[in-house]
Length: 203
Image: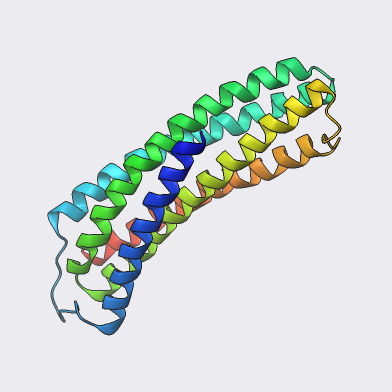
């Protein structure tokens, strides 16, 4: 999972550089065309695709979050082997979400580059804000993955009786992972809300 996480983080950094370049250009007013309303076709297509991919990521995160309660319960009842098995299954689910995140990054890259052509400024600002929400969503997924790796290692320590194990680590990690999963959902909701406002500009 480490290699895929590294690649994901690298792709995020590239998108952010492109995103910041767009934000600076928009702030400077380079792309402002007064009185016109226009949305590039590739922005619209990428937006629709990104919404579907993000929905899949949220669904995977919600399913994983639901299973965390079972892991926490197994841990409390000292069924460490069961907890380990469930965490390993969640690792596969997060890997699938990461693959979706790479796909989402590609769509966000298209949206970022084409958002410069969106007019009027109000719509373009909403588009930039929505893209920023989805980038933050991917960062939250990255944090979730890191915590899941930590949970797996902690349970392995616990199961083996390793002295590095802390009795509170499992429950604290699960609590923080639930927070991250909720953040993924909230950020996607913000993206959708901004896109509703975006559409309203053109009505």
